[in-house]
Image (cartoon, rainbow, N blue to C red; front, top):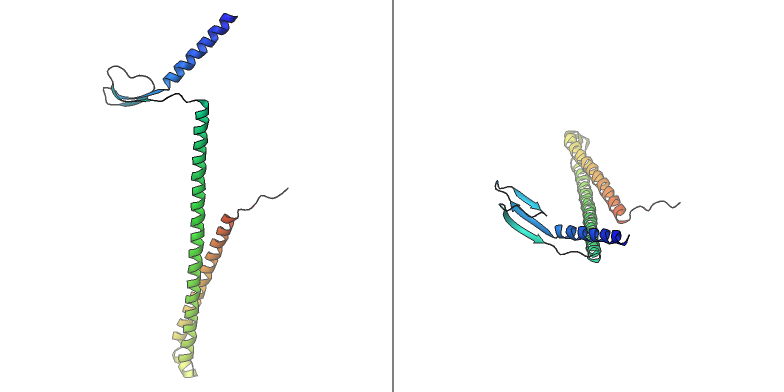
Length: 175
């Protein structure tokens, strides 16, 4: 029984040793046709060896540490992406708000212009009749500017809501 255990442990040690050696070297070589190979097996004698990379054996503690570092890097990248996405959302919300303010200001100016135009050319019934098409055109421009301002306000409101949601994600309902 002891010999069987000794033989089994010798086989396990031999297999583990050959497995570690097989993964400790990586060969890059080309064959006679110019095809590139990257293997952990030694190249044939007639092959042109480009590179041999040797890797020292990694202890389980080192493997865990590398895995932990990889996870930390991945988490940092994810945080950077989230931050970048959030900054983009906030930037779009600010731009939409600025556009809405500009559109409202333009609509106010156009409305004021239409009122002044009506006052200047519509002070008597005969002048009102003579300039009715121009007065109507100015009023339509003012109405179009107000509609554009309303669309800009709606866009800014939606962007603001998106930013608010991104800053404060909805919490799952409590049971």
